[in-house]
Length: 73
Image (tube, rainbow, N blue to C red):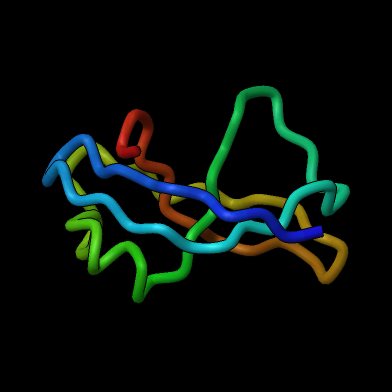
C-alpha cells in the first residue's frame, strides 16, 4: 500500500511530498525511511554526510549496503 508522505530534511529544511510504501514486510528496531538517491540529492542528504554510516542490511534478495543518516529527516 502507498501513502502520501511529506519529508523534511533537518539539514537543509527542504520539504518534499512523495509517496511511500508501507506494510512492505521490512522490519527494523527503530523507525527508518529508505529513499532513492535522487530524493536524497533534492533533500541535501547526498553526497553522504560526514556522520552517515555505510551499513549492510539483509534483504530477501541478499545483503545490500546503504548509508544510514540518523536524524537526517
